[in-house]
Picture: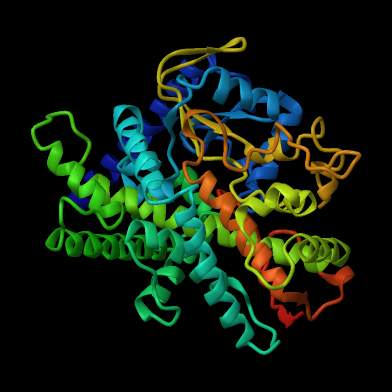
Length: 494
């Protein structure tokens, strides 16, 4: 009994200290930070936030407090930036100050600030510089990678022809194809579409990515320091992420055993060779941990973002058959039916380019952006942001900024066309973010979206089991990621 009483007293003491520290932290920060809704100790603004609609909850708060405000996710304050002007001021005009990487709790559980995607400071600079140069060496933005995408598009078209017009869920058809492009760069080879280990990795990747968009995933973002020890869907996400890390570790070990320093076969080889060159540098960031986490980040980002965008795009085209018909007409006129699409065709296909940009804008795959962290005490507008505070650059609010898009909540390719029907750039089209931490795979993703979409539409027309007016294009989940609804479709030969 005495032991139980002491444990209870200790627990209450810890809880009291936690609450007092939370109150002290909020009062200390509150005078410096942008205004925001009053927060409670420990739970922050949880009561004002709908975890099923986190993005919409934050945008509703911005209606009261303006484009720059503070919200507490659990115990921690986050500065939220809404609209083109606020995001541009931070990520472009004060790029260095906002270049730190904030936490994405689910992925941070495995990355732990290693690798190019989730690191900050000198580590991020070294890894990013190397990654951009190495990806370029392996053909990103050049003819080499175009040929890989075209080859993969051929495999996909052959597979879709094998469905014989049956209604299918396109999810894994697309993820297998898209993943093979980044796999050929990172691992040096593609996977067979029926490879069981590959399919297992894709399933786990999709599961962990989708978890970040669920209500539970958003709840975990606020209370990860407690929930990581509790049972729940987050434990399955951890299991999936760990399995993917083990998969990458195995690939790295295979490369280490067969490495030829004079002939790198892929991204992993190039990193290993650079590790050897940096052995005597005490400040090097080139080690196995950073290699594994960089390769894992490229594998996930290079698969899920493009395949999810295409999946959303097919649904939108079935909802708008008039748009699908115009893309078909432009493909037939510019490319024809007897050769594969080439990336240089996009300059002659303004309508298709506008449709792809509008799919990205409407789909809004990473609506709250990757969280940033302020690298030093920073004056932003009339506020003082202390070093280390997290910042959410709400990319969705830029992609739906009414000052730049006439009908921001509608799917409308005219947003990217001028009065003569030519493609029109739009500064608020930022699906890859902007500034020092923009997506380093942007060039590859743009090429994939164009070549895959045009190759598929050159060969097929789309059919839904529903009539266009009955198709619901509202997302299934919106959190860290936007997840389109699950659906089936038929690929009918043209």
